[in-house]
Image 1 (cartoon, rainbow, N blue to C red):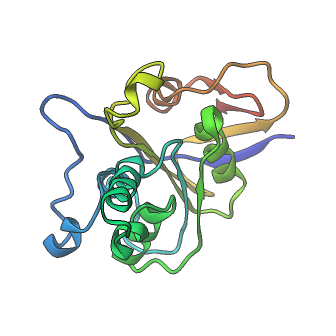
Image 2 (cartoon, helix red, strand yellow; image 1 turned 30 degrees about the vertical axis):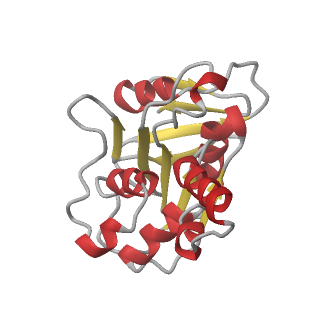
Length: 209
């Protein structure tokens, strides 16, 4: 079975010595101060691809989610035997797409996905099968030092956002199936978005038409 989608706008970002977070100066200061790093990354990515109208769904994917905020809450509970309600609301996995929906007044649905090493490909699959148009956001914040000894490599802040529509200039065919393929990586998705060609995961394949 072949399915045709259109991906006309995408944005790829990762932290550098000069830019630890995307530019989110467009967010009102009072709102911005309450946001976590992950929310700023997700919204900073989305700003570059989302349309002015809000008639689109959102698929948000993050393997690790709000781990900086979660550590703060656990530490607070350990020290004070209580947690901040505002801090807890910022620790849930769907905090970032929720904040984006509130900021843009988007009343369409959103979903939040965490699937271990398959998070990126699972998020894209959910995007491919969602009602169009749909905004896909994959975002990770920098790994806390507490976690680094347990990780194969420390995580730097990074993310990808793109819009999938039913019309446009860049036509892509995606084919569901069982493919023998290693875990889909951030670099592989970035390369496909920039250079085209073919991108393969364990359960779908995308090819520029």
